[in-house]
Image (tube, rainbow, N blue to C red; front, side, top):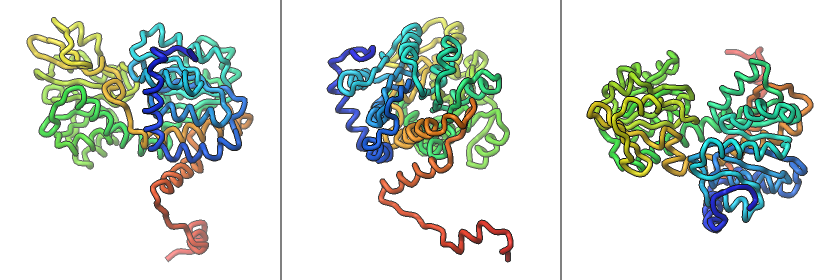
Length: 417
């Protein structure tokens, strides 16, 4: 076994599914066409902590085709697709450490396994890899050239590290790229979260009070898709500007304490802790469904829910029924990412842009390594635009270009009315 995964016999099915996703990842494979010839990452070791899915497998393949030696572990114990992990290790020769449902100890053993390879670059989704590297292996952290971060939660953690003076190498916040926000956070999270809820519950959304906690890019996408399914969407927020935006987009806005008693389905997408807490569970009506689509399983206070319950049982696969004073509250996927633990995550066409950002960002970091101090950086605008152009081209679309006269007008101040 090239790594640690559930069953090598699953590899054939994994290859079949990876190839299916490849067809929808045209931007990433357009980058691969050039990189396979030029090998711009030759000799580099990349440690990646990402959701082990068919889409991630295609990113790993492109990095390997570019000459890199890649080591992959899971960024969430319930998001791993065991057949994909087997295919990566057995067929594609990429050391993969991931088993669906692995316990906390195994999860961190896998993190340490990829870090033991002394990587030159890191790719993270949630910043567990980077934080483990800095806290347990600080001598290794000082030798890393740079890294990338995929998700909002990770960017928040990394910025805290940078502000505290603890970050030892530059990291590109792939999460903040416009092409990532647009496709991954809004369209991807919106569709895949609904997909996970429907697969797990088979409930009708039309007519339900659907509470979205957080109106960032993910919350916007989720609210949009829930409304499209006929739900009555309620948004809760702590940011007055985002709350105002939600109101102007046509949603009801209120505190969670008010929404708790009227909501039928609750989904957290904030990146913060205990967004649904003990006092909210006490107000929920019989049959309320609670789910999380934020990166970590901290947004719902599951410990408090258990302490308040007289009985806990599995109602359906991935659905736990908690009995509170005769009322039933249903928790999906133990409070972990419902779109990955309860479904297949984002469609491949969505992850295509996110992973194109990852690939181009690690290459850019490698070429600029001596010029950048330890900090959290934005994806360079020219890379973001390059990805958008490649995507349009893959769709058979063209856009206008500025004429010399228009360029002169936009760059001058003399011309007016």
